[in-house]
Structures are given as structure tokens and as C-alpha cells.
Image 1 (cartoon, one colour):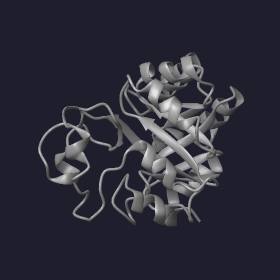
Image 2: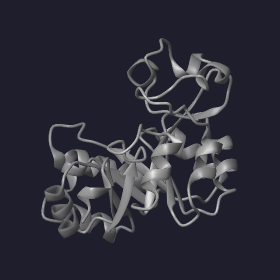
Image 3: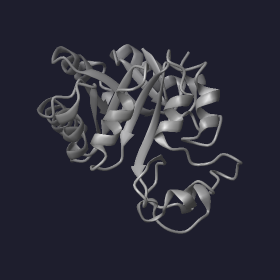
Image 4: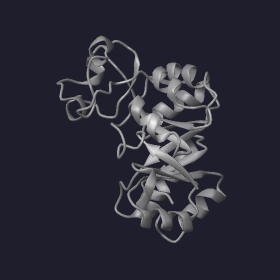
Amino acid sequence: MRCIGHRGCPAHAPENTLLAVERAAPHVDAIEVDVRRCGSGELVVFHDERLGRLTGAEGRVDRTDWSTLRTLTVGGSDERIPLLSELLDAVPPSVGVNVELKHAGMGREAVRLLEGVENEVIVSSFEPAALREVGARSDLPRGYLFSRELTTKRRSWRRGIRRARRLGCECAHPEYRLCLDGGRRVGRARDLGLAVNAWTVPNRRAVRELRRAGVDGVIVDDWRVVG
């Protein structure tokens, strides 16, 4: 079972920063990061639509130019918002990269950057349109992200798996609680040819249950919960 550092493991460094990559890389199999297009067109590594929670600045990422974003610091630290290209350069070739596209419209640039690295790569998204854009341009592995959206976990799981297959994804990325049924759902997904990476797993107990369920990877904020 692979350990995937969610946003670079914010338990140890400000999320989605180069320092997070530096600290997490020796401890994880892959690093997951979030990508958005900023106001001047560059692809930046940042989770939220708005700047406030992480930087204290006002405004939206998609309405703020890179010339401004590059001056902001993250989480009260000295770390700055990186470009996707800068972050990819910081990840050792032996460590995988899971790039979550937060919206559609970035497929062309994301594929160009990701096909230029030595790392094992997965492109994930909650947005089917973002995954379709990547699939139309590349054979990079893709993962469909989903959570509990309907009345029951079972119905939410079934819809998520159907969408992953319809999109031609190699991976399903469910919210971790959807996997906790003794391994039945995970087993069926794997029988259908889908790898299962569960997010965001909070503690050792949940990791143990997911290992027994047969998941392929756990996406965590702290690598120490994966023993």
C-alpha cells in the first residue's frame, strides 16, 4: 500500500509548497498537489479558490496575476506559492506525483509539463471535464475523485466507480470512509481494473482498516500514520 502525501503533508510544512515537498519526499511514495490557473495564465500550486485562508490576502487565484501571487507567503511561513513547473522540478524522480486539477481548462499545459518529468504521474480531479481534457491529449494515468454525495455510501460509491470507468480512468480516488466495508467495495473496484487510492486518511486505525480492505494507496496529511 502506497503512502501519498496530501498537499505535501501539511502536518510537517505549509501545504503545497516546495518545503513540503522537501520534507515529505524521503517518507512518501508520492506527493499529491493541487493546481489552478492564475489570473495571468500560469499554472500554480494552490488548493483554495480564494487566497485568504492560506495567505491572508484578499481575492481569487484566478483573478490574481502571477506577479502578485509570487510575493505572497503561505500559512504564516516564509514559503511562497510555487508554479507547477517549479514544484515538479523539486520532486525527486523516485517519488511519484499526483496532480489534482481543481478545474477544467488546464489540460494542454498540464500534459506538457507532466510528460516532461521522470516521475510516475497520476492526474486526478473531481471534475470530469478536466479528466477528459487530459485523456484527449495523453495516456497519463487518471483518477476520478469522489465523496459521499448521495443518501448512502453504497450509492455514492457506485456512482463514483461508474464515472471513473466511463471516463476511462485507471484509478478511483474515493473519500476514505467509503472504503470501510470490510473490503467488498474495494475488491469489486479492483476486479474492474481500477486501482483505489483513498483520501484523506486521518489516523493509524483508519490506515490499518484500509490496508485490510486492500486499497492501493492512502492519501494522508501526516506520513507518520502509515506504519
